[in-house]
Image 1: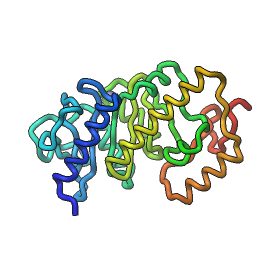
Image 2: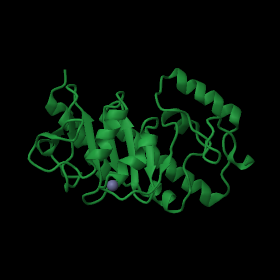
Image 3: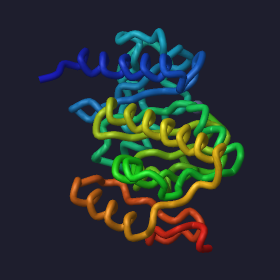
Image 4: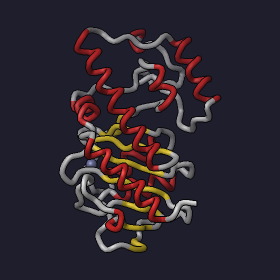
Length: 234
Ligand SMILES: [Zn+2]
């Protein structure tokens, strides 16, 4: 059985990966993990994720009260507690500022087209939450409708938040999200991008269901219906 220190090591490992892969810079981002007793391990405010250590992590409850630790919890504490309250299946949350995802949101281009089968199977829907001022109550409010059913949400002009059954899964979803955004960006520089045919999207959605994924399959970003179809038909 894993000790609390093992879980702390997992959070620190994910922080290092986010920093090393350039998904966060300086003091950006925050990472959390739900411990078996239901309390949350969270990165402290004002720490560089490339250098944070296991003993610096703060333990909080689902209401955001500090249970142990010396520092101040991350300023985005409410985003993390909201995700755990909405999603009992979630054991880890990562927030970062992946460049390509942020660039898409600055340009007003959604990432919710049905383009790549692996993205549909692994992440499902990629909604973009409207802009909200960081560190304020507005930020979790802007995410609430998406976090209930999506494992990866782009935050307009800011970054992304990803969820997973554990903290490594949350990290992998961040990596998948940014990789998908980079691929779409490259494709768009080469020419027009075509969506998968609706019949294939439906097939992937069935496979996804069989694989037991909790988050929903992509919705059409143009009309918002659950029935995915080629956006160019609008
Ligand atoms: Zn941020």
